[in-house]
Amino acid sequence: MSLDRYRIAVVTGASRGIGAATVRLLREHGLEVYAAARSEADLAKLSLETGCKAILLDIADRSAVEDALAPLGADILVNNASALSPATPSWQARTGDIDALLDVNLRGTLNCLAAVVPGMQQRGLGHIVNIGSTAGTWTLPGMPIYGMTKAALHNLSQTLRLDLHGTGIRVSEIAPGRVETGVHLAMMADKAEARRRFYEGFESLQAEDIAKAVLFVLAAPQRMDVSFMEIVPTDQSYGGSQFHRRQPA
Image (cartoon, rainbow, N blue to C red; front, top):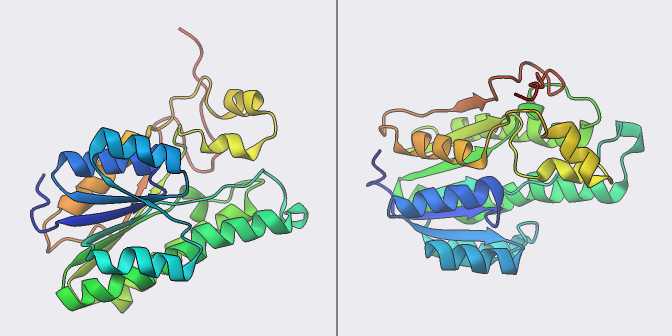
């Protein structure tokens, strides 16, 4: 796979999981990668491991994002940063959780686009990869706010394709099903029970699977835009609750 047309990539939510796996893969393919996240310790480890350039950043802060990302001249923007709140029906959602999800999953993505897209337009080249979720197109119990934000990201990705038509900038959305990154532990106060409920006995996707999908859409010929890619575990069908738990061997 060739990424010769690209030189600089920005990956948000890069300190762990899908973001970190994407940073590693893009570095392996010779790109200059700026890894943005809020965890200074995790970023330092990733930078030491891969040679990426760490940016300590809260993407909900519009001016901070502009100052940090606009000067970089990024050819690739991977909007991976995402927040998840405890499972609850919509009428019980707490204001703080709602604000956190809106800040990261929507406002943060828009802030990154505002900082990076103008430079891509000037150069006539760029690729935006939004990491969405099957929760944006599937109805999942107990995840109304998260699902709303991912549905909005799905709409945004499609609108970006229209708004950037004819500019040479490609837009891709990758919507994973269950990925074993630990993010689901945020859904329950009892972390051991959350791990048992969401991971044990299930053959979930791994962060590296999604990173490889990111590489695939980036490396596709310029004439080709992979606008939407849904990736789920073989044992997971429509709806997050439809997941076959395998019996121990």
